[in-house]
Length: 385
Picture 1: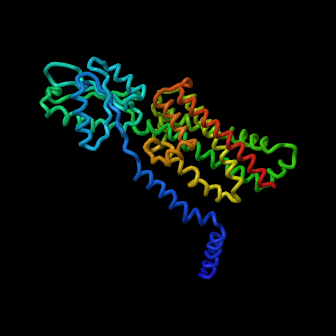
Picture 2 (picture 1 turned 45 degrees about the horizontal axis):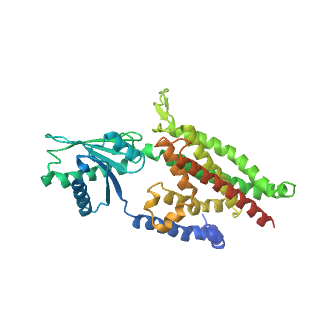
């Protein structure tokens, strides 16, 4: 083995990196930018206000004031709204389902005996709601049991129910819309960007531009062709997330399961359609950005600039309204924000096509896809010129 030859190969690689400004930026600048963005989001998140709808014995003014006072002393931002002393559990469920409250509490008016506290949550975020339940139980015990008010006559029993999914839903059920949207978007973008780059490098695009075919027609044609494979990919991903196939043991191979079999209270066809519109936008985004790349490595370099920020700001890990104000503005311009919102409305809350939220999300996703068609057509024109 020759050390000189090894060093010569290493020197050639180093010189190649030195001449590639984009790669140097990916190595040194992009990690700092992404890490700084993550730190900004984690450190400067706004404190969430927990909206509580109360009914029954806890709905009188004195009880509400004491609950808010104890919450403030505990550092919890609580907004209490009374549904009335005579409100039923159906009224509490309706308030949570309509989005007027994050959690509903009903303590029936009774005389003697320990009370049965009924707590209602959405069920769309089991991890967060589990922590919320523990905090509310401590608040109720601190606010009323030692007060001598007679509101809690003895140790209360808590019964938790959800209006969406079920109390037994796990984190995977909640993250299913994220899997369907984010991973589909990521892989479709990667497939389209690299494939369109090969078309350019191979000269196919130049030959098409020499024909009467317009640039918009070229972009739409590529989008349709790549969109077919994007559709197949979304179909496979949707089936894998929602379905389950039990494969029996075959010889030495043990039994195993294919598919996640997550809970979904909505129409799977509508969930597929939302993910498909998002993926078609990723197709056009890949066509657009690939015109700025000369190698496949440079296509991959767009991932931390385009895909990763959408994972951090698109409402996947924390609500958009808890982000710093500036980042909320950025998040509202990202397609992932609307895709995650629409998929959660469909899969976790059972919203249909008649839902104003789903219609708005689909309209924005479709508009973003059309925007990137126009941008891609304009970019091709500038490149050829």
